[in-house]
Length: 500
Image (cartoon, rainbow, N blue to C red; front, top):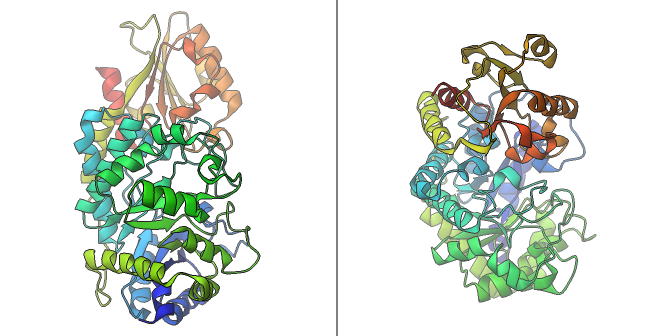
């Protein structure tokens, strides 16, 4: 390959599963003309992660898996070299593709005892097997961020929690499970995105901590991963003044952070990949197309994710990039492709999944991570005699199988209450993300808080427990049990607990 062809191998632009034929042909032209190294799949241009403001006419979103596999085969057929196919699938293909296996969020896995690390590896392996079956070689996961800020708008449920030892152990186990399945995996978001209050899709988070504090907390899981031989790290769009002596320099374009800290101080010699270069934390920093790509490369990134200016980026790096650095990055990418056994002419069939077996696996995990996080002083043997279901799960077996009447509104419940009654409340949290109060109705939560002041109330939380502070006087509840997901298997685990 000549210099520009080698530089092309460092790019992995976004491809959309649901897209117009015109855009698909434009991607084919990009692959053929510039010899890009890979593509990263997103659901559609309407995906939140796509940051695509010029909304196109809505397409049909049916048969996503079939369309993904067809596009992988189509794009591979026009590429001169095998494309490295990547995706964000932190909790499985379902993160991007409907009607595919959905495994627990990291926050749920983080509720497992640290002794259950083998189950976490099995979880990573299952995710990896599903991706490999769909023709995907690289998962941009696991998240190795320590979620120390409960108001974090973008990490939260994606992290294994606030404890550095558990995050380190579970991130590594998930990574090793995916590697065992035969795909590549990637720690993210270096140097640590857990203690931020800004979504880097929308702005630039700034971490105001000393280097010593970062070493003890944010950097710890990455250091442990490097010591255990991880091969890829994604750098996040966040400013860390203690590491750069600059207030608004994103880590993704900081040579001090990537080359100085990550490579030289921490000894990482694997692939460094940028977070998506279309994200607003960095996308508007440079007027000249291609300059962002040059700066990201110059800082030490080997793989440039979601570049929107590939032609200009290739020319800028060819003109001003260090030739030896280009060669090192190129070799790292080629070695990864070789280790994965990529073959250009190998067609991927549409996979099928055994959902009954997957449900059984998920139910086993749910039995281990579902736990009581609050126990009032009056917790006794009084069993619930009436229930309340708030929210709309995919399927409500809590209501149908509880063994006692379960109402679906306060108006229906209140007339049936009497002194001393014990109430079981299922709260199905609409969103795992804190935006718009997790999708919850604050007026209903106020009613729930008052109900817990007057009656014995056991709350079963099917969703992100970080929503709990939104419930007034939740401390008065007799008990609070967190099940993390609204899946049928999670509801059945809760019903098992209720019935002893």
